[in-house]
Length: 398
Image 1 (cartoon, rainbow, N blue to C red):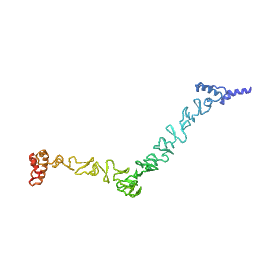
Image 2 (image 1 turned 60 degrees about the vertical axis):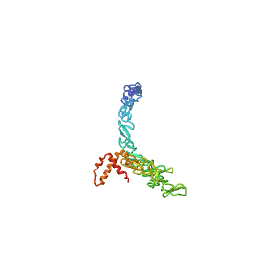
Image 3 (image 1 turned 90 degrees about the vertical axis):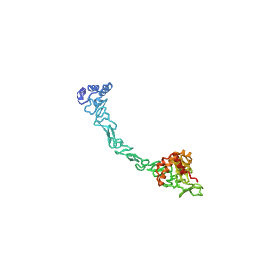
Image 4 (image 1 turned 90 degrees about the horizontal axis):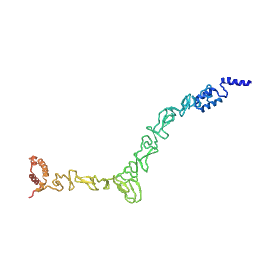
């Protein structure tokens, strides 16, 4: 009987005062579960756990007593530490963040840039400070933008000086033309040699024969040696360069003339030119010495135009000379047309006779002491002019 009294006293008086309840559901948890969990399944779970003195009613509900946890959804969480409910329910901290005293903060060693945590020591988009981007192929190392190992910064861009054609060995030191950059030095491929920044074949270049800037007189370089005009006859099948002569068989080797090159064993001039006189490449279209063909020299005042000897526009070619057909009495108008005393010829060339008369008047005026005025001759009739010209040009007989 005494034991029953003690149990009842503990259950209804001492137990509640100490925060301890019996296994039967309490009215407080039942009401709290019903208000916090509208869904029937969650409400039943809350009430069921409360019967066993556990669950959310005893963790963060009215039966929890003093607690730091808050009901978020179906769970009790610590809003000061829970990164999925940091400071408030459903406030989720971002990647690389933790919840500290109800605030989302970046993990140790990281800095908040915008809405993300970044490592300012290694992040190339936030190197040393937020928003400081590394460009030109640089990486972020210890908070500083630097080029990767084996690369050098040239005007803010990382370059490999060992193979970059525009920055070979040093920044802005470029390899030109066919030259390539290898090991930090400009070089050539295919057996060519670098001369003044260009890749050249020293075995056949007349301006760089055998070595750079070695020019051959006459412009012929064979196997790296300059050939004289005529190489001496050798008795050996092959004689490598020695001095200025090279032979390839038991015959003399002819050095190509100046301006010509040796192609396939034959001397060749540039397009439009030909070897004339064994010494020079001549332009047959414009050379007065070799016009149209070797040895065809333009004389008598002619010049070479398009491969033919031609007189100036105001002259005619007569008997190999350029003459003024409008004033030459032996080629009057056309080649071979001579002015004679014949009346018919004089009548046919009245205009020309007048011109010659005027010229003669000027000459006579300067030579005679009487200095007859020019106007007298200019006013001569056609018949008088014919007689005058006839007297001047026709030899006297008897």
